[in-house]
Image (cartoon, rainbow, N blue to C red; front, top):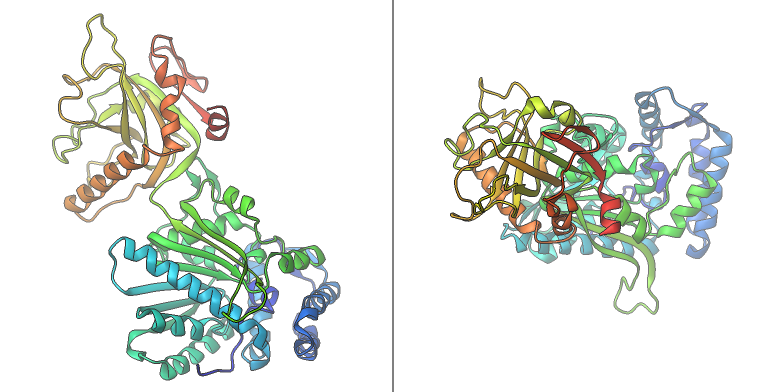
Length: 528
């Protein structure tokens, strides 16, 4: 493989990555005054025994922190601007051969091959083509590019790489290096690389960080700029810098928003968890977080649109190696659902609504009147939910389909595709997933209990009715499938749905006619 002079962004990860989204800290004096000293120490220590590198590097970071005591920034923008200047100043060193010891290269090769293999397998399972898109977060001057192309050629896939970095000088170097890498790569016509400057969360989400919401985290702002990164990639990779993000929840949300359905999210580091934890302990203003343990990763993913796949901290990176190498590789796959922070219980009389679900779209809906649930819906994000529903049998006669728990896919929102006829209020439209004949007669005016436990997607305006119908068809299929699996299937045992003989009034508001409540999903699942 041809070798080029550019940074790996791996061993100096705390420098190459703090620009990404470390929100709270900045330095009190210009960084360029000490950057030459740091670079000198790096070059002096790089070719010592690799086993001593950890302590040398951490000591360098600690001294750099002592020379530049951190202070709380007034705004995220101020901090990111400062970070841009720091890494612009350091770009020439990161673009040199000295930045990559030979001992690390096999680990990088292993991490990249692992990533592309999982990405390819995931998409093949969905019958996708052999053309793939990958977003490299904190790409620096092009650290992983040659390894990506080498692995892509071995897998006989076409790879389109987008690199994102805050430093414009790093990006300039990365784009120059990309041209040279492509020119020297086999099958050059198959691959492409482009890089641009920007903060990951801001670029994808349109906000500085994502607030917690009922559905997990805020979906940010969707506009012409952010749409260029929404649901566009088969893989998102954050190598050697995840510990530098202050708000890791926002980073994971941005990753999920960037990926296509079934896409792969990878957090990796060639030197492993303990190395990053040392950095964090010695200089938390630079590395505010350690890499998550497996249990911590599962906690981070709890309300995100991901299923955990691999978690690897030791591996034989070359066939003839005597010992396993220490590293960090955590991968997750994007799934079309996520659990709610709170189960939403609604009880009220079914309204006739707008008459659009069954007549125009072929998906009849049972609507709960907005007038009775406006307060309940105030903090419920618009979008498509999945859950369980029961039509109460209020009379003495047994009517088919009553007092039976049905699967449901539920839209909460304004129906924006019906231009000029949008709902004036946020309403609840529930489509009960049943076979013909499962429910006798219509049930307008009857009492329905509805428990929302999962989220599928935000509400959006579709360009045409066929596009909307296709999306609803997919929503119904996903709800029908995933409600059969935990944790969603557990909510079918909710007393709210099971104990129909008991009068129910929600604890959050309402009366015996119509009421609602929000209850912790974690607490419910612990008790179930």
